[in-house]
Amino acid sequence: MIVDVRTDEPDRRLAPGTTFETARGELTIDASRWHGRHLLVAFDGVRDRGAAEALRSLELRVTVSADERPDDPDDFYDHHLVGLRAEGQDGQALGDVIDVLHLPAQDVLVVRHDGRDVLVPFVVALVPLVDVAAGRLVIVDQPGLLSDETTVPPDAAGPVADQTGA
Image 1 (cartoon, rainbow, N blue to C red):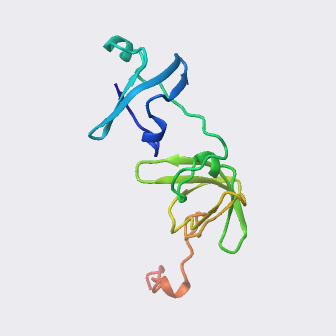
Image 2 (tube, rainbow, N blue to C red):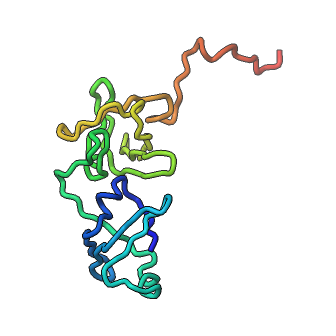
Image 3 (tube, rainbow, N blue to C red):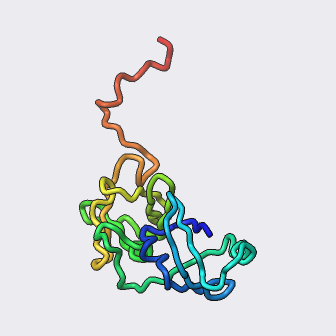
């Protein structure tokens, strides 16, 4: 059966022998292989089309220990990011990370800032430092990112038109 992969580590998480506790009972991967961009998985005890169809839309979740880290030091699991204190480059507290959204273009941090949720693209240009051990990350604020207002220097605004018609 084809599995819709939603992990950055499919070869690690969906390897033969991996067991999942699901709403329909325990499932263990018997074999898996890539076919183009699709991961084909065979589960122990699922031998015919009817049994495979019964698993349609079933979500497979893996519990990861709190101290486990991805192989790439620049990658983070969501549970490492949620709860971190967001700070500006000057160290000023901006809020807390309350969620991580995995959108098609990029991951986005949801930061509770001044009583509202702000979406911060999780890219190095805007989040240059993540220090899980210290419980913080740094956000480089940009006009319109953390506030609704964009600040334009007076000399950059250009000439002001006379609204009186004179």
